[in-house]
Length: 118
Image (cartoon, rainbow, N blue to C red; front, top):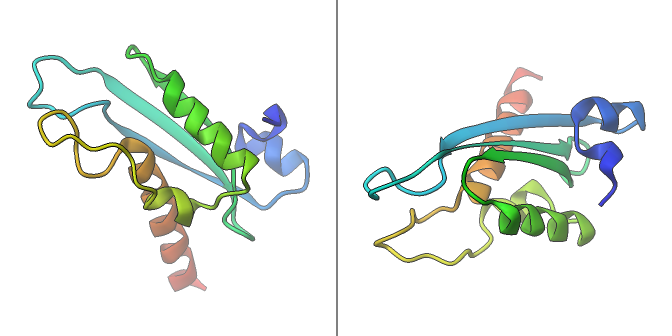
């Protein structure tokens, strides 16, 4: 993973048309006996919607989510790909959309709103 693109500032310094979104929520549903807050900053290129980087913050172990983002970057996936990629879902433990889906859906909505302004 190219660490220069993990932040909007780093991506813009490299000449990319970068933007970011922030997701804040629980890493698992609030009806579970325990959960922790999770924050994800997703960085993407506005020109082609390609995922450039991310930061994940949580007391819960989120290494596999970071690995998923790394694979997305390696495969040149877009925010559209990540928004609806099929993640493991178990109704008693998870929400229908994984938090990685949700942060990408925020990015899509941000781009949709930006198009309305133009």
